[in-house]
Image 1 (cartoon, rainbow, N blue to C red):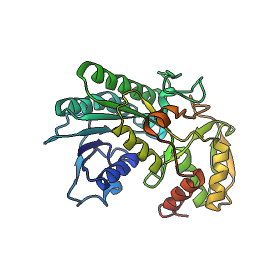
Image 2: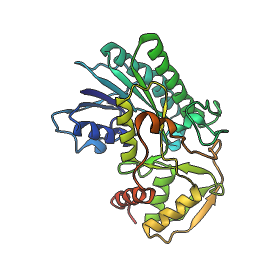
Image 3: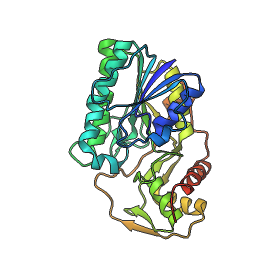
Length: 311
């Protein structure tokens, strides 16, 4: 199997490249390193079945030789990134997805889009099922990411219906683990960094807003299972164990053995109040559910951060 992974030097993309190589695939990792890093795949370089290509996927993509899969993971993914890179976020969701789908169509390869729970916006339905259309502010600061991914999903389904491309859509919920950026800006990297450096943990609002966190190994397993299943409709991959951000902060303090205090700051605009996946479809069609215990996954992430942050 020969696979193109766009955004392959990012947090999730690098784990996916590593997983596919272990299963005997030949992997072309494509990244422009705006948010990804060559360091994430440094341990893979030199392997005969791994190729790293520096390229912006919003430009024409030229891949020599046949492809079996195009896995489109290129995109800024944290609020900090897409608030700083709004145009690039929209371009990679629109032009980048168009380019990647064009490669899949030309090569008669299967295509998988990395979508996101953010397409549900600030949801009015809880937990979120795949047939919920979402509650998104298209002109708010988060709209650049939400609408880029919603457009990418629509374009993926258009290529499936109009051109017969064999497509998959995975809606990824909050994920953590080794190689997530220390300055990513999302809750777990921020809390862990603050806890390990003795700084106050910054909780936005009163901390009652909820999220659901999964470890990277569970996500990669879900993606792999989706690749094997003839499922063209979107599939949620996430941990249905919901917790408040204040509870998450307290857990990280306990697991890190930190004495940091918790401080509260104003809630950002359009910050979702709840986030919890309904994974009925993943259980039924993929036989998937998360297996890594929440505390164990957080411990593994904290241990990785210990080698990255300075007190």
